[in-house]
Image (cartoon, rainbow, N blue to C red; front, side, top):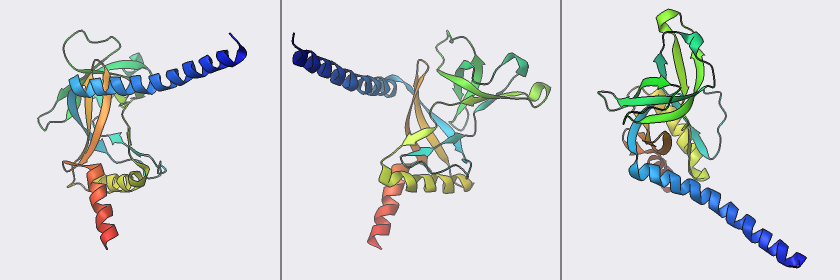
Length: 197
């Protein structure tokens, strides 16, 4: 093979690899949504000093901790498996945290400990780092969506939550809803009203 042919083959291989990786990620995410279990995660206000990101909403969660007996047994950043359950209001809660993958049929999430909170004795907690803290959107809508999200999080009468599908430890954030309405639709509605005025 001459040099030109080798370069051409190398180019094709690199192009195929670059197409395969995102396609595989999309395929796996769609599989989680199609066969996984949907959970609603209550969101919480984001630190107002965080900069606006441009292409996604930064999410924070209110129910991301669990009490533990001995905080010294755990480390910040440690990989864990979080088993979930749904509370009486229909929102995801942490049932247990383990270093070992659950062997039961319960839904679980593979993630890590954000930090260990030393509150004193039985009040010690693990704060879990949920791996779905960014909701990507079209850039023309993301800034307005972030503003809307922050506004509704400060309004105690509003109900904002993330819809997350979970299967075999993997999680896919499908949507963010404000009072049952997808945030993208809410932003589009407000933007179109603003354009009309």
